[in-house]
Image 1 (cartoon, rainbow, N blue to C red):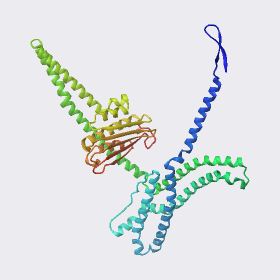
Image 2 (image 1 turned 135 degrees about the horizontal axis):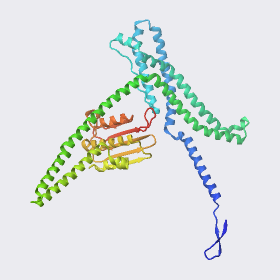
Image 3 (image 1 turned 135 degrees about the vertical axis):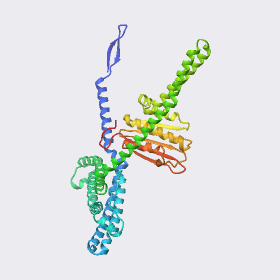
Image 4 (image 1 turned 180 degrees about the vertical axis):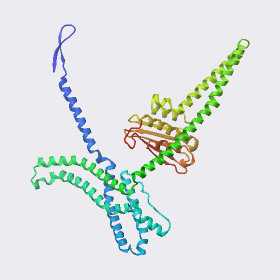
Length: 449
């Protein structure tokens, strides 16, 4: 489309005019297409995630294991019910509960297939054959294990059946174009229902994952510790962490006091002495006075640098001013051992997480320099919307052990204080790998700030 436009000389020329309405329509259509594409990808994403198919394997394996345990435990329970009135029958309770405990341990491990950790519920035990029998017969935790083995098969078949029905419905609809004519469906109706079946596959994947989580929750309810035991364990861990933090704070305070007394204070006293001597010597010996002033200025500069170093140990200013990437770059740059740093932050972590990450990397690098005798090392840091992950690797001697007073104990205390996880692999001879994950949200769903 063109319209007349008057030029500077007064003539009329033809100039193209853009159709803004058409452009807006094109932009809106592209945005709508991009939005629909993102929604479609998000809906079908579970089909491509390993967690979905691990859930399928968990449900399938559960059908086998829970059925086998039900048959074996049920048969043994029936035998015991008949022989319980005899001495031999009473003695058989010890191996019976031992077998049930072994089956329960297998079920707890199976929950790890979908990332669910089920700690063992504490059970009573005693010494002596009769005391052992009595403790097992009166222990509610052991009877909970028996109840799980006799009921888990019903739960496993129910949740697996629910997941199978959704998948079967999706498969039924998807295959309608092949045989829909046999039940009186038209071709358009068959293809429309097939498209609905394709969309139903995204729901089927979510249902399968939910069913697996439900079965694992049932196992955790009967086989895992109760809330009181969990709270008691958390209190014990928090008490131990508090003791370590108090000891670390006390040690840091003593270090600061020692550095201030032996370093900064001594230099400032020397500066005062040099200034006094320079003041006395200046009228008669100006050259010597100038030398003393230069010495005082150098000592003052060293004192300022040491105060800055002490302050950096309390809270690194570069972390607050320039962020975690720059702060970790400064830590790595000061190392005489070549260390490769990769820092990919999709989001800015909370301040508490950033500070913990800085000190964890600093302590890990310090351990490498003091103990590892490594030639090279690497630090990889990444963060998404849920957590920050740190991976420190070195090719040193290995054999790192947090129980022997190394810096790993301090790292572990910081990680557990933020409800994170720490994994260390350090076989003798190396290499050493330290993996840390710091979640942004605590157990109550509150963001750590």
